Length: 100
Image 1 (tube, rainbow, N blue to C red):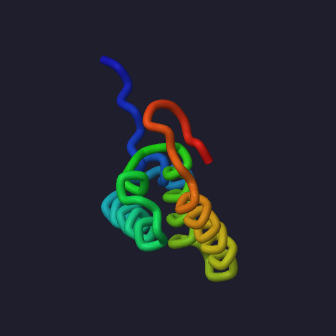
Image 2 (cartoon, rainbow, N blue to C red):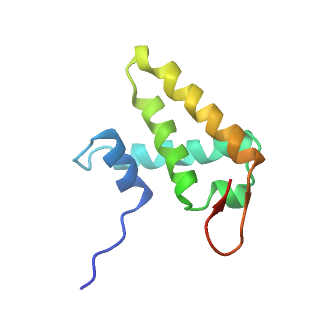
């Protein structure tokens, strides 16, 4: 049996250093909120709802902001805002990698 590819929740949990499953539903909600925030910021919904590495990085950054200690929150959110701006300005190729 082949190994299943990690889900975005798995990837976010890894970024958050979470090893249990107790927060999986909450993390899935945070990922959904992050995708909505990307769309609100002007990123095309098909891009925001995709699984390109650059989108996954933005979703992880949003989750890091969400779960961060108060003293660290500003830095993560500024990073997420910058990622939103860059994604909004970016174009993506149909086949192949990111064209940022």
